[in-house]
Length: 156
Image (cartoon, rainbow, N blue to C red; front, side, top):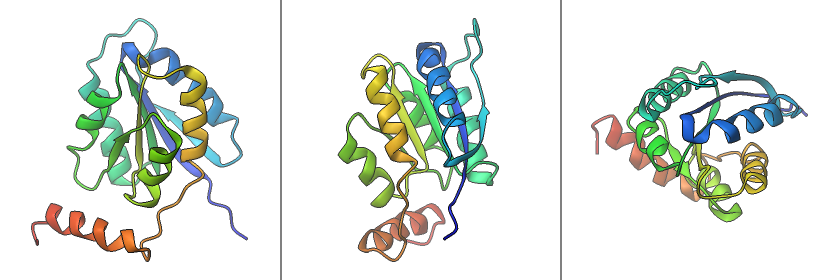
């Protein structure tokens, strides 16, 4: 059996820096991950979240990475930014069920987390769970995601 090894981008603003750093280390130690690419921020930087969110989402859309984790204060700003990139589906999660469904039902390839909303151990757990899920385009959810694809391409 072939095991997929993910190429994962991570990014944050200053409000999500600590979680991003811990999650990046966790991912680097995870056998399911081939490479982790850090899009910032770095220590002391004050880059607005949309800059990071858009850059990371573009890397997902282009195929440079398979998936991405973004962290800001709430996760919401990063999700809004990432979702502006066509073909990228980002979701903010704070529980295991939503984490699972974000991938299995919605083909979410960008997970966003809020450092000011959930605890670090929960964030780490959600990331670990999330990279274990796969979207099945042949499932009943596949047709629903196809509607979104068609809308993005201008063919309702």
